[in-house]
Image (cartoon, rainbow, N blue to C red; front, side, top):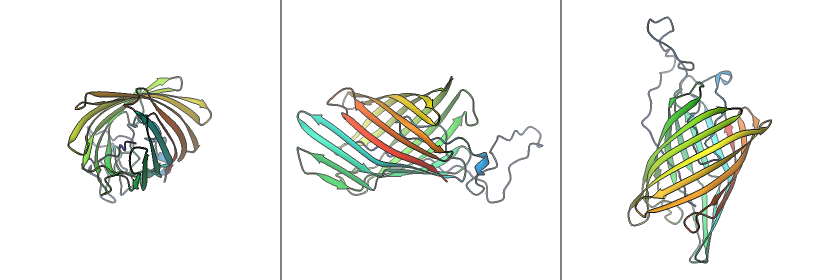
Length: 283
Protein backbone atom coordinates (compact mmCIF):
# COMPACT_ATOMS: atom_id res chain seq x y z
CA UNK A 1 0.00 0.00 0.00
CA UNK A 2 1.51 3.26 -1.01
CA UNK A 3 1.62 5.79 1.75
CA UNK A 4 0.94 9.26 0.45
CA UNK A 5 1.97 11.06 3.59
CA UNK A 6 3.24 14.46 2.76
CA UNK A 7 4.05 17.97 3.82
CA UNK A 8 5.40 21.26 4.67
CA UNK A 9 4.87 24.88 3.68
CA UNK A 10 6.57 27.95 5.05
CA UNK A 11 4.83 29.12 8.19
CA UNK A 12 2.36 31.85 7.36
CA UNK A 13 2.41 35.06 9.39
CA UNK A 14 0.12 35.15 12.41
CA UNK A 15 -0.96 37.97 14.68
CA UNK A 16 0.60 38.16 18.11
CA UNK A 17 -1.72 37.61 21.08
CA UNK A 18 -4.09 40.49 21.45
CA UNK A 19 -3.15 42.06 18.12
CA UNK A 20 -6.01 43.44 16.04
CA UNK A 21 -6.22 43.82 12.26
CA UNK A 22 -7.03 47.10 10.53
CA UNK A 23 -10.58 48.12 11.25
CA UNK A 24 -13.28 48.42 8.60
CA UNK A 25 -13.15 52.18 9.15
CA UNK A 26 -9.64 52.38 7.69
CA UNK A 27 -9.97 54.02 4.25
CA UNK A 28 -9.32 51.61 1.39
CA UNK A 29 -9.02 48.55 3.65
CA UNK A 30 -11.49 45.67 3.41
CA UNK A 31 -11.44 43.22 6.30
CA UNK A 32 -12.44 39.69 5.22
CA UNK A 33 -14.64 37.58 7.50
CA UNK A 34 -12.53 35.74 10.07
CA UNK A 35 -9.39 37.83 9.40
CA UNK A 36 -8.96 38.62 13.10
CA UNK A 37 -8.63 34.94 14.10
CA UNK A 38 -5.20 33.30 14.39
CA UNK A 39 -3.45 30.50 16.23
CA UNK A 40 -3.26 32.84 19.24
CA UNK A 41 -6.83 34.10 18.87
CA UNK A 42 -8.82 30.95 17.92
CA UNK A 43 -11.97 31.04 15.85
CA UNK A 44 -15.04 30.86 18.12
CA UNK A 45 -17.12 27.71 17.69
CA UNK A 46 -20.08 29.72 16.43
CA UNK A 47 -17.92 31.29 13.68
CA UNK A 48 -16.34 28.09 12.35
CA UNK A 49 -16.89 26.99 8.76
CA UNK A 50 -18.65 23.74 7.94
CA UNK A 51 -16.55 20.68 8.76
CA UNK A 52 -14.34 19.70 5.81
CA UNK A 53 -12.08 16.63 5.84
CA UNK A 54 -9.43 15.28 3.47
CA UNK A 55 -10.61 11.71 4.04
CA UNK A 56 -12.01 9.36 2.91
CA UNK A 57 -11.53 10.13 -0.82
CA UNK A 58 -8.12 10.71 -2.41
CA UNK A 59 -9.09 14.21 -3.61
CA UNK A 60 -8.06 16.72 -0.97
CA UNK A 61 -10.31 19.52 0.25
CA UNK A 62 -9.24 23.12 -0.56
CA UNK A 63 -10.57 24.30 2.82
CA UNK A 64 -8.07 24.53 5.72
CA UNK A 65 -8.95 24.11 9.37
CA UNK A 66 -10.16 27.31 11.04
CA UNK A 67 -7.49 29.36 12.83
CA UNK A 68 -6.59 27.98 16.26
CA UNK A 69 -8.69 24.83 15.75
CA UNK A 70 -7.41 21.24 16.03
CA UNK A 71 -8.82 18.54 13.75
CA UNK A 72 -7.97 14.82 13.85
CA UNK A 73 -8.66 12.61 10.83
CA UNK A 74 -8.13 9.03 11.99
CA UNK A 75 -8.40 5.78 10.09
CA UNK A 76 -9.56 2.83 12.16
CA UNK A 77 -7.95 0.32 9.84
CA UNK A 78 -6.99 0.08 6.15
CA UNK A 79 -6.66 -3.24 4.36
CA UNK A 80 -5.26 -3.81 0.86
CA UNK A 81 -4.91 -6.83 -1.39
CA UNK A 82 -3.28 -7.33 -4.77
CA UNK A 83 -2.14 -10.21 -6.92
CA UNK A 84 0.56 -10.02 -9.57
CA UNK A 85 1.82 -13.00 -11.57
CA UNK A 86 0.28 -15.36 -9.01
CA UNK A 87 1.94 -13.64 -6.03
CA UNK A 88 -0.45 -12.29 -3.39
CA UNK A 89 0.39 -9.21 -1.33
CA UNK A 90 -1.68 -8.12 1.67
CA UNK A 91 -1.22 -4.78 3.43
CA UNK A 92 -2.56 -3.51 6.74
CA UNK A 93 -2.44 -0.04 8.27
CA UNK A 94 -3.70 0.53 11.80
CA UNK A 95 -4.78 3.97 13.00
CA UNK A 96 -3.20 6.17 10.28
CA UNK A 97 -3.79 9.76 11.36
CA UNK A 98 -3.71 13.28 9.95
CA UNK A 99 -3.39 15.82 12.77
CA UNK A 100 -4.30 19.36 11.66
CA UNK A 101 -3.82 22.75 13.32
CA UNK A 102 -5.22 26.02 11.93
CA UNK A 103 -2.52 28.71 11.82
CA UNK A 104 -4.42 31.53 10.16
CA UNK A 105 -7.71 31.93 8.35
CA UNK A 106 -6.23 30.52 5.13
CA UNK A 107 -3.37 28.27 6.29
CA UNK A 108 -3.14 25.11 8.38
CA UNK A 109 -0.34 22.70 9.32
CA UNK A 110 -0.76 18.94 9.05
CA UNK A 111 1.19 16.01 10.52
CA UNK A 112 0.58 12.55 9.05
CA UNK A 113 1.82 9.19 10.30
CA UNK A 114 0.84 5.56 10.77
CA UNK A 115 1.81 3.87 14.04
CA UNK A 116 1.65 0.38 12.54
CA UNK A 117 2.07 -0.96 8.98
CA UNK A 118 2.25 -4.59 7.89
CA UNK A 119 3.03 -6.23 4.53
CA UNK A 120 2.47 -9.95 3.92
CA UNK A 121 3.63 -11.49 0.65
CA UNK A 122 3.89 -15.01 -0.73
CA UNK A 123 7.19 -14.14 -2.41
CA UNK A 124 9.26 -13.19 0.62
CA UNK A 125 9.42 -12.43 4.34
CA UNK A 126 6.65 -10.40 5.97
CA UNK A 127 7.40 -6.92 7.27
CA UNK A 128 5.83 -4.67 9.88
CA UNK A 129 6.64 -1.56 11.86
CA UNK A 130 6.20 2.20 11.97
CA UNK A 131 5.10 3.84 8.73
CA UNK A 132 6.45 7.01 7.14
CA UNK A 133 6.03 10.46 8.74
CA UNK A 134 4.69 13.33 6.67
CA UNK A 135 4.30 17.08 7.09
CA UNK A 136 2.29 19.36 4.84
CA UNK A 137 0.45 22.66 4.79
CA UNK A 138 -2.81 23.64 3.16
CA UNK A 139 -2.85 27.17 1.73
CA UNK A 140 -6.25 28.34 0.49
CA UNK A 141 -6.10 30.62 -2.57
CA UNK A 142 -9.75 31.52 -3.11
CA UNK A 143 -13.33 30.58 -2.27
CA UNK A 144 -12.88 30.29 1.47
CA UNK A 145 -16.10 32.08 2.41
CA UNK A 146 -18.37 30.52 -0.18
CA UNK A 147 -18.95 30.84 -3.90
CA UNK A 148 -19.05 28.37 -6.78
CA UNK A 149 -15.42 27.23 -6.47
CA UNK A 150 -12.40 27.12 -4.15
CA UNK A 151 -8.74 26.21 -4.64
CA UNK A 152 -5.62 25.59 -2.57
CA UNK A 153 -1.97 24.50 -2.59
CA UNK A 154 -0.65 21.59 -0.49
CA UNK A 155 3.14 21.30 -0.49
CA UNK A 156 4.37 18.24 1.42
CA UNK A 157 7.41 16.31 2.59
CA UNK A 158 7.62 12.66 3.69
CA UNK A 159 10.36 11.50 6.06
CA UNK A 160 11.64 7.95 6.60
CA UNK A 161 11.22 6.47 10.07
CA UNK A 162 14.15 4.08 9.83
CA UNK A 163 12.09 0.99 9.05
CA UNK A 164 12.79 0.56 5.34
CA UNK A 165 10.42 -2.40 4.98
CA UNK A 166 7.24 -0.39 5.55
CA UNK A 167 8.55 3.19 5.40
CA UNK A 168 10.11 5.19 2.59
CA UNK A 169 13.90 4.94 2.62
CA UNK A 170 14.57 8.55 1.55
CA UNK A 171 12.96 11.95 1.96
CA UNK A 172 10.15 12.38 -0.58
CA UNK A 173 7.88 15.29 -1.43
CA UNK A 174 5.65 17.07 -3.87
CA UNK A 175 2.81 19.51 -4.43
CA UNK A 176 -0.96 18.92 -4.55
CA UNK A 177 -3.41 21.40 -6.13
CA UNK A 178 -7.08 20.69 -5.24
CA UNK A 179 -10.07 22.62 -6.61
CA UNK A 180 -13.71 22.22 -5.53
CA UNK A 181 -16.88 23.23 -7.41
CA UNK A 182 -20.46 23.56 -6.17
CA UNK A 183 -22.72 22.29 -8.95
CA UNK A 184 -26.02 23.01 -7.24
CA UNK A 185 -28.81 20.60 -6.41
CA UNK A 186 -26.72 19.01 -3.66
CA UNK A 187 -23.93 17.99 -6.07
CA UNK A 188 -20.25 18.80 -5.50
CA UNK A 189 -17.25 18.17 -7.75
CA UNK A 190 -13.63 18.02 -6.67
CA UNK A 191 -10.59 17.74 -8.94
CA UNK A 192 -6.92 17.52 -8.08
CA UNK A 193 -3.50 17.46 -9.72
CA UNK A 194 -0.30 16.35 -8.00
CA UNK A 195 3.37 16.10 -8.84
CA UNK A 196 5.66 14.17 -6.51
CA UNK A 197 9.01 12.45 -6.17
CA UNK A 198 9.31 8.96 -4.69
CA UNK A 199 12.41 6.85 -4.02
CA UNK A 200 12.33 3.27 -5.31
CA UNK A 201 15.46 2.12 -3.50
CA UNK A 202 17.86 2.97 -6.30
CA UNK A 203 16.80 6.50 -7.24
CA UNK A 204 13.97 9.00 -7.40
CA UNK A 205 10.99 8.57 -9.74
CA UNK A 206 8.74 11.44 -10.77
CA UNK A 207 5.03 10.79 -10.73
CA UNK A 208 1.98 12.86 -11.54
CA UNK A 209 -1.57 12.05 -10.54
CA UNK A 210 -5.03 13.42 -11.16
CA UNK A 211 -8.36 12.73 -9.51
CA UNK A 212 -12.00 13.71 -9.91
CA UNK A 213 -14.68 13.05 -7.30
CA UNK A 214 -18.43 13.61 -7.48
CA UNK A 215 -20.36 13.78 -4.22
CA UNK A 216 -24.03 14.10 -3.29
CA UNK A 217 -26.18 13.99 -0.16
CA UNK A 218 -28.18 10.75 0.09
CA UNK A 219 -30.49 11.27 3.06
CA UNK A 220 -30.12 13.42 6.14
CA UNK A 221 -26.46 13.52 7.19
CA UNK A 222 -25.50 10.55 4.98
CA UNK A 223 -23.60 11.37 1.78
CA UNK A 224 -21.80 9.35 -0.87
CA UNK A 225 -19.07 9.85 -3.46
CA UNK A 226 -17.64 8.26 -6.59
CA UNK A 227 -14.05 9.01 -7.61
CA UNK A 228 -11.58 8.34 -10.42
CA UNK A 229 -7.85 8.21 -9.55
CA UNK A 230 -5.09 8.14 -12.16
CA UNK A 231 -1.35 8.04 -11.49
CA UNK A 232 1.53 8.06 -13.96
CA UNK A 233 5.13 7.14 -13.18
CA UNK A 234 7.01 9.26 -15.70
CA UNK A 235 10.31 7.40 -15.31
CA UNK A 236 8.78 3.94 -15.71
CA UNK A 237 6.29 5.04 -18.39
CA UNK A 238 3.40 3.47 -16.49
CA UNK A 239 -0.16 4.70 -15.89
CA UNK A 240 -2.33 3.21 -13.11
CA UNK A 241 -6.09 3.96 -12.93
CA UNK A 242 -8.39 3.23 -10.00
CA UNK A 243 -12.05 3.73 -9.12
CA UNK A 244 -13.13 4.66 -5.60
CA UNK A 245 -16.42 5.06 -3.78
CA UNK A 246 -17.61 5.56 -0.24
CA UNK A 247 -19.94 7.05 2.33
CA UNK A 248 -19.73 9.74 5.00
CA UNK A 249 -22.08 10.29 7.93
CA UNK A 250 -22.12 13.42 10.09
CA UNK A 251 -22.74 12.58 13.73
CA UNK A 252 -22.49 16.27 14.69
CA UNK A 253 -21.08 19.56 13.42
CA UNK A 254 -17.63 18.41 14.58
CA UNK A 255 -17.71 14.62 14.03
CA UNK A 256 -17.93 12.59 10.82
CA UNK A 257 -17.66 8.85 10.16
CA UNK A 258 -16.52 7.48 6.81
CA UNK A 259 -16.09 4.28 4.80
CA UNK A 260 -14.51 3.75 1.40
CA UNK A 261 -13.09 1.27 -1.09
CA UNK A 262 -10.59 1.64 -3.96
CA UNK A 263 -10.51 -0.87 -6.83
CA UNK A 264 -7.66 -1.04 -9.35
CA UNK A 265 -8.68 -0.96 -13.01
CA UNK A 266 -5.43 -2.10 -14.59
CA UNK A 267 -4.06 -5.19 -12.85
CA UNK A 268 -1.17 -5.81 -12.17
CA UNK A 269 -0.12 -2.15 -12.09
CA UNK A 270 -2.72 -1.07 -9.56
CA UNK A 271 -3.54 -2.45 -6.14
CA UNK A 272 -6.55 -4.71 -6.71
CA UNK A 273 -8.58 -3.49 -3.74
CA UNK A 274 -8.22 -1.32 -0.66
CA UNK A 275 -10.88 -0.95 2.06
CA UNK A 276 -10.83 1.61 4.86
CA UNK A 277 -12.95 3.30 7.52
CA UNK A 278 -12.36 6.14 9.93
CA UNK A 279 -13.54 9.25 11.71
CA UNK A 280 -12.92 13.00 11.67
CA UNK A 281 -13.02 14.91 14.97
CA UNK A 282 -12.81 18.70 15.33
CA UNK A 283 -12.02 20.32 18.69
